Amino acid sequence: MDTTLSPSSTAAAVDSAAQRVSSRVVAWRRDFHQHPELGNREFRTSKIVAEHLRALGIEVRDKVAHTGVVGVLRGARPGPIVALRADMDALPVTEEVDVPFKSTVRTQWNGMDCGVMHACGHDAHTAILMGVAEVLAGMRDRIGGGVKFLFQPAEEGAPEGEKGGARLMIEEGCMAEPKVGAVFGLHVTSNHHTGMIGYRSGPLMASSDELRVFLRGEQTHGAMPWRGVDPIVVGSQVVVGLQTIVSRRMDITKEPSVVTVGVFHGGNRVNIIPEEVKLEGTIRTFDEAQRSDVHEHVKRITEMIAAAGGAQARVDIKRGYDVVVNDPALTEWSLPTLRRVAGEANVRVVDKVCGAEDFSFYQKVVPGFFLRLGCTPPERDLRKVAPGHSPRLFVDEDCMPLGVRALSSLALDWLASNG
Ligand SMILES: [Zn+2]
Ligand SMILES: [Zn+2]
Image (cartoon, rainbow, N blue to C red; front, side, top):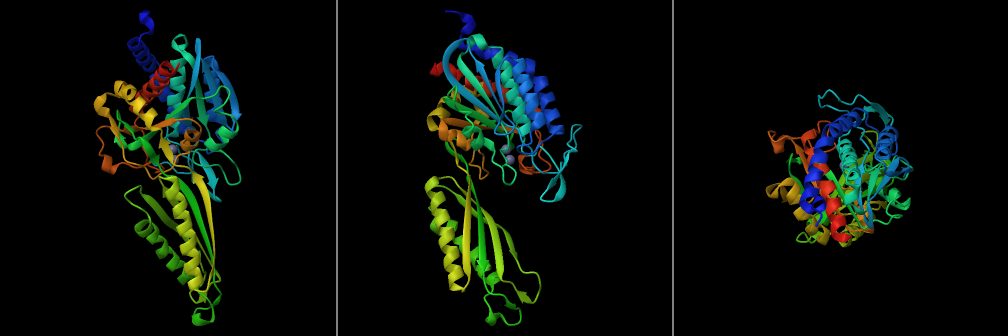
């Protein structure tokens, strides 16, 4: 047996290659952090990614789904293809973390000036995957098959009127030619300390749909409500009625769900009952059947309450991201690898997350596994740290070598056991 290709020597080779690239992973992350770009506008980021992959001898297709980069690393021998995914976009958030590489980038968002920040940690994801590409490119002779690197734009959503993200990457062929057999990805999380890897078999992150309700009443003087139909009162009843969906209609022993009304617009003067009211909200579920049930209940409750009050209702539900469902067999298969790289005690089952992720769309094409990487420094109290999308999100860079080792090892082990 050729000992240079034994599993333990491969693990050692991953570790030392990850060690060698670690300071540059930090440097890339700081550079992206200081130059964050919004969805479908990741021009600078994707240029750096594409140049890095090309320098490693990886085949590159750029401008996929606007600013995405797809790289294919061919191994020395034929075999299956495994995909690894990172997202590259930042958020319209004004950074409040005091680091030397703090973002000072500004943008116009909804007509207002605000900052741009990597407030979801995608800077770390991109840097980690660049590190993985370098580790694996140096191990070509050990690879049967190949590794596809998916650097995806606009995970947080595309600008109004544009398509983007994972859905568009797939439409533009990122899972085909060469055809992908499985996909892995990760997300940093401040809910856990550095060194920890969180996993969950089955549903991990929620589906996310946008709700809009338009209620038309009949305008009248505020002093004479009987001469019209007050859409503010009807709208208030609708808000209360919607609360009964999760509490009274859903089987809570199965999966949790959320219906939130976040916007209530109507009226402009103390003594005028307006003609119309607009409500907006979000719907989160962890199961496709419950998702359509919630949609039906929202429609029926809204229309019936409106009718009871003499108003007219229009309900628009815009389907967003699907549920992130970790393939149970692939999740189970991944655990020995994760335990080897992180240590037995540092690989734990995590709670479901009501946030959404468009990684779900890749998982609709092939079995996929999405893991969570702790990014809070060990000395910090987890109850006091800022979550993702906060202007105070802090990512401990010490979590990144583990991310590099985890994704590199999952890819190599998957190719070895599926070749
Ligand atoms: Zn996010
Ligand atoms: Zn994110």
